[in-house]
Length: 192
Image 1 (cartoon, one colour):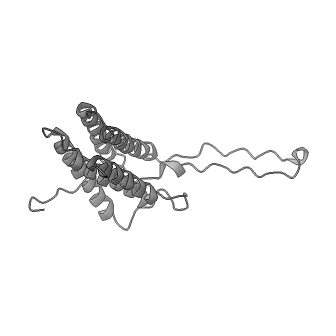
Image 2 (image 1 turned 45 degrees about the vertical axis):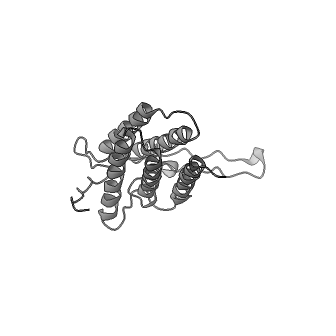
Image 3 (image 1 turned 90 degrees about the horizontal axis):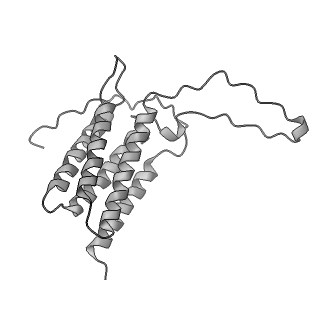
């Protein structure tokens, strides 16, 4: 007989797998391309901030509703990876193109690689995007541990959500006149 805990673990695992499937496999597209307009990015940013608010509320309930948290973190994971898939944020895995050495037929005939013209430019939002994905998957990991048995570390999970909220705030803030990495989320009307 399958218990609800195993069903929750399976659900979160499937959500993580679906989120990973959304990430582009190669850096074929330019990292700076945005979807047609910033509406899609703004919608995803709004979804991200709403999910963070919802997960904080679900963890703050007495007792914490881990079933609800599981669903929200699954949505949070999908939303964060969709931000990369839609080029709202650069894909950290392909942010810097690396030169591919050409194999020589014989080591004695091998020509040295030409020097690189300089250090390739890393998109300004690549590191924060990597931080966002890292924090989302760390939250998912700790939630899976909590669902695996024992008492959940609600304080630790809330701390991770606070860190994620700080990261999202940083991604939507412009510093020193530079453009923000993500558009500021559009306020959700009260009737939704």
